[in-house]
Image 1 (cartoon, rainbow over the protein chains, first blue to last red):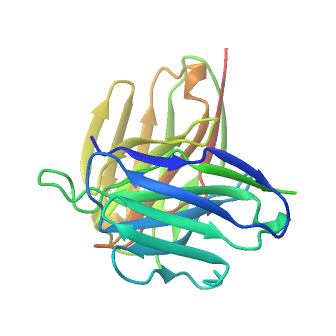
Image 2: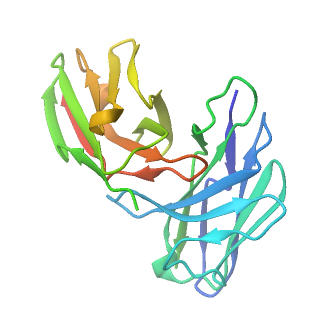
Length: 119
Length: 108
């Protein structure tokens, strides 16, 4: 159980275009999902917390108008990178907490990531 | 916020050797997880270990919450163990905060 998927796995786009990344919890409902970004040879940095039915909470330094997050259902959160530029090229990873009985409250499960390259 | 420090940053081993990776954190936490990031970027859950000791095959982990550290032991290392190992912690309901990782290279 506790499987998280992401789509697409990788995407290449031109500078100035927008890209949408989907994060789905496949076998559980997730009221909260988290978005991280990882640059080469670096650690994962939290970008935002996505809450179902409400606005996302962004970390300091993350532009909320550039990285639009929508958590419209209990199994889907989307991250849209608007007007992407080469400096947005990175590995984007989402995670979710499985709140089912028997699962540790604070344990997080991660998707496989989406590699974004902006030309 | 909570600071997470991992050591060593890099580790080179011969196949068959044992190793210990350390994770220190600056505040009390409700959760600590160890991950292995494979070459494709996927984070593999190794342990959910806010306290105590767990073992899974050649891997084991110990967290001493009162002293704010955790150890990951890898015994009889194999080339497939190569990659980056992350420690991450959180407090109740919040997102995981990651350390900078330990890059392990195991050669045959």
